[in-house]
Image 1 (cartoon, each protein chain N blue to C red):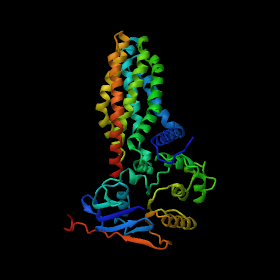
Image 2 (cartoon, rainbow over the protein chains, first blue to last red):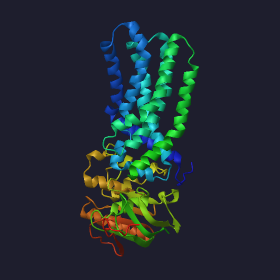
Image 3 (cartoon, rainbow over the protein chains, first blue to last red):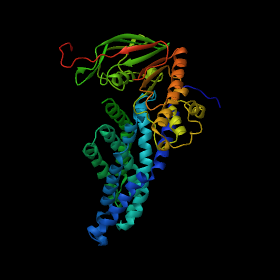
Image 4 (cartoon, chains in turn blue, cyan):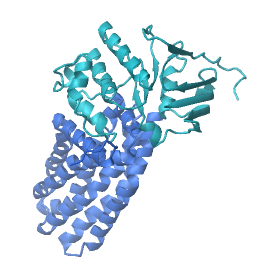
Amino acid sequence: MMSTDTPSLRRAFWASLRRELLLSYRHKGDLANPLIFFLMVVVFTPLGISEEPRMLARIAPGMLWVIALLATLLSLDGLFRSDYDDGALEQMVLSPQPLACLVLTKVFAHWLLTGVPLTLLAPVLGVMLQLPEGGYGILFLSLLLGTGSLSLIGAIGAALTVGLRKGGLLLSLIIMPFYVPVLIFGSGAVKNAIEGFPVNAELAILTAMLLAWSVMAPFAIAGGLKISVRA
Amino acid sequence: MPSLEFRQFTCQRDGHPLFNPLNFALNGGEVVQIAGPNGAGKTTFLRSLCGLFDEWTGEMLWQGTPLRVPDFSLCSQLLYLGHQPGVKKSLTAGENLRWFFGVQGMPFPGAVSDALAQVGLQGYEDTFCYQMSAGQLRRVALARLYISRAAIWILDEPFTAIDRFGVQNLETLLQRHVSNGGLVILTTHQPLAISGVRLIELQMAGRGGNDVD
């Protein structure tokens, strides 16, 4: 194969994805954090609210979605923090490759290591919340689509607040309004599935949101990071 | 041959100029030392060259064309080493260097272990950076200079935490870079043992003066 020395975006993509995965592998605790949070809240829910199966079955779709959303939120604050502190972010901004593409790899890795495990865990925890039979497939599918949007939206907030000393609260305030539609259509899809109604509309809207955010969010994230670095 | 020119160039903080306006031109083959008291804006000046700071006034010309934010052509010819060198502690020295070049879209450099040997870190390629001392971390960052093909090196206090032998090595490297037509812009408080260093002194602008426009 002929090797060229011209910079290529594909190489930058793989190099940064490889690094993200390596870093996560070396900080396994950070990976487990949102999952343990998810597990804990699901365990506490029957204890705190009611162990009555019919009651649990009614709140299960909404509960699972809300907890998955909060677990994602929990993992977002650190998304750009260490790169900001050790100067790696400056080097990313200075790379001749478009920053929007580099951050998209970071968000993709975040989704792969937070959104996907949450999605896989959700049906298992659904059993603990007496989620009715018809809901499992759609719970999985809606979370798979929805967590992608959650990672993308959250990264915008993380990029804007990374330069601030205590950005955590501001981060939540910035992204919460954008999380609302994802939550509504995500948990709505699961409820409809359980009651035997069609879920095509909800899934289509979740997919549309994911696609729209995938296109728009990288530019917003890159813009936010540039503001944070230049401050 | 790289050329950078500054006309009435000054950086600002909260609307006040940090230093008196600068007028000078830099060409390949020069080592330029930016000097000045603490707080005169040396780091800020270097950051604005890289586009990491944009509250400046005046003109910056790259190859004769005015520049607002460094574009692709400048980014790919620029290597910036700041106070925080962007070395991840939970990666090994080799992984850090490969990422650094990878993220610019360059092929994985085969010369990683050579470059590490050049900075006195022979055999440290697979050592995690959290096991290294401050000086060794700095050396990992400096190893980039041995691989990079960027024409302009912008180095903010490159000698910090480096021992005397390392400083000598680095000076030899800088000399070699400029003799190949490269341009080095650096700040340091140490006297440099490089011949023909061009000194540019930043003079702190008086605060609250009415010379601000």
